[in-house]
Image 1 (cartoon, helix red, strand yellow):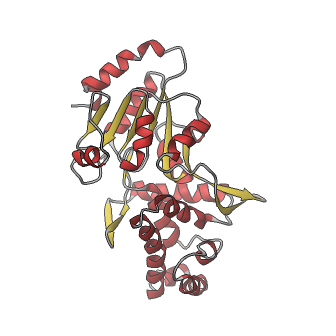
Image 2 (cartoon, rainbow, N blue to C red):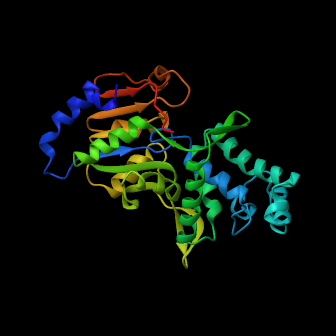
Length: 300
């Protein structure tokens, strides 16, 4: 059965059909795990590291990295090698591990916002146009690659981004009915833009982590509010004046955003766990304001 045949979604459309000419119908979607399988920000990080796309040493950006001197020595040595030679070197694999180890280590410590901001700060020294080109190239590589996951400690680095059918169907139907669709993601904004552009959503309605610029170049300072957890609501409120009628996400981190919905909340159960875990750990009662996509369909 198509998600569009869901009785609760049908009732939602019927109840709000009289808003057609008022221009106040917003629907908000998270990106990673909600609209696509995988994490597009992490995928862009892997692309950046694998292609050694740095303007400055990560050690200069990550002043608090516990092995900062080693990180810088590896960077300086790899910067003097050719691309072909670099990928075969053991120190390149160590460099990769120091980057992802720092990121995932902070995730495991509960420092979600800092971890997500830190990897975005690695684009220090780039122009916005340059980063968007990297994002486009990364996205193209992702959608053209077969799905795979590389284990990294307790985590996996995913490749081969694919859209989730039910979310695509909802977005298409909402657009057809005149809803204004927004994306609010904890990944960097440049990686999220091509994901939603393919769905007809312009960059102006995509919210993600961004960096400040000085003299046209990015500096290692994130623009506030950083759209993580409750700050997703703050970021949305700073850009859109209307409270959304529908919010969709796959993560407990987005409970504040989901609860900001004035009507329907859609949980996409894409994290290899029974969907009841989300409600149990989040201390949420699944009432009639929720739709649960228990087994998302991955498009090929």
